[in-house]
Image (cartoon, rainbow, N blue to C red):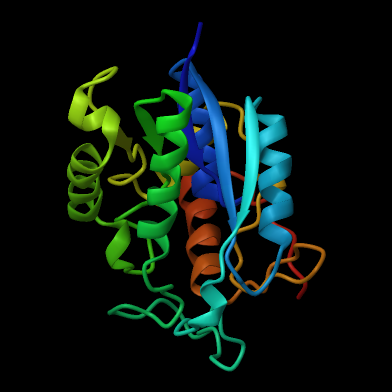
Length: 227
């Protein structure tokens, strides 16, 4: 039997590639997505498409009320999404504590499933500078997880591992990897402000990084743009 793994799946390019990698390594993938109050639900619809296309064993969408706190252009409609290109520093699209909360819930589900593996598609090369996408954060969370769970304390089934297979890859390398594993990137949505049909704006940081990645990879960009 395949070992179970929890895979965080946003519906974007990176998480789809991460799911394909988990599948290629022989894991039965239990995908976890979040409706956290982001600007649009197109990425959640994309997550459902990707989970089905890549043969996820199960896919769940949890509701989080991060929009109640705001503090990010992705959860507060009064804060504009930057469209002038990727700038140094942490942008206003950073969502406070998002990856910490999502990994914590993935950790909870992994314990219930008897899984010792969690996959997350964070990247620290071609990215927007979020602090919770860095290798130091992943290593610290993994250490915490093995202190915080019954399985970790009692040693049931071995040590919990947080897999971040994309963390040191360029966007072009991520796209090449996913393409080789059969990912249909036309199913994904990466835009911070996609419309209800999932069409991308083409000018936010995520759109720019995605487009540059396809160009550098030498592969056609299947993204649908609204302008």
